[in-house]
Amino acid sequence: LEAGVHVACLNGEGSAAECARKSVVCVARLSATDENASPLYVSRYTNCFKGNSRSNVHAEQFMIQDGQLLAALSSPEAAGGCLRLYLTYQPCHHSSGHDRTHSAEAHSTSCTRALLAFRAAELEPRAIALEVCMPNLYRAHWAHFDSEELRRLYAPRVVAAQEGMLLLASAPRTLMLSLRQADWTFLLSLADKALAAQWQAAAAVAATEAHGGPPGASAGADEAGPFTTGRVGARRAMDQFVTEKLARIETYLRCRECAEPGADARTTSTGKSQSAAGSEPLGGGPWAVAELAALFGTALALE
View 1: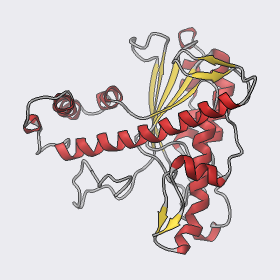
View 2 (view 1 turned 135 degrees about the vertical axis):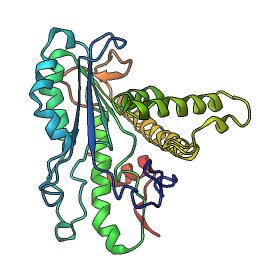
View 3 (view 1 turned 45 degrees about the vertical axis):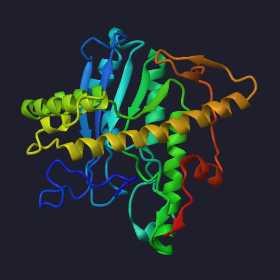
View 4 (view 1 turned 45 degrees about the horizontal axis):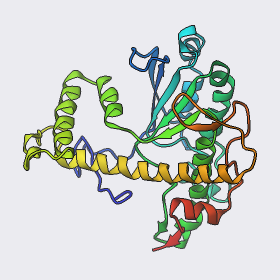
């Protein structure tokens, strides 16, 4: 159970093929100013296991070093466009790992800071927006632990994850987004054609029900396929959960911006009010632990 949503696995819940854990993947999509045009560049990256979480190479690091992506960013068509990243979770921020031998130390890796440095060096000079889309949250929403040992181990990483999300959300020309129907359709278009067709059918059924379709519309779903009614429902519930968390962050930052006199704000091509290019992030930290707990609805308590 995660965020009130039960496990849903396309390989079969409870089966031998059920995924043991999520491996972080990043799909990068570079688009020109015309969002209806074909993407200028699309690529997929994944974490590389190096023996332990402190040695692993993260998907975002591979993306930042992708020479073909850098070349695409330098093309005239990319100027003023958007780099959209589809990530398994929000980028880490000294929040990864389960290593108890280093429990008192912050994890050395912050893909959040790496992405922000990449944004400033490669995207900002070309007026390219950064959109980070996430179907799940990593630790930022954790609130309860089964033991004091687990609380001591993970509470600092929960707080670090929350700080990372605020850093990213407050950066100029940057958005954090949950996934919408169109995003899933795009991602499935990169998969096997048969799988993409099954998703389209399941999405059509879900859309019919969402718009007040006739009772029993779900009977049209292929319950023998991977996108069963239950799994599609679980996915929609998690997307809604992420949407609500991100909305709270957005509201919080807007309120802090309004409380800061003389803030130099403008509206980006995506419609989001942001600080001027190169200025300090809106509502930039540091943030008190109590402030983070109130924002994310986490008390870091024992069960």
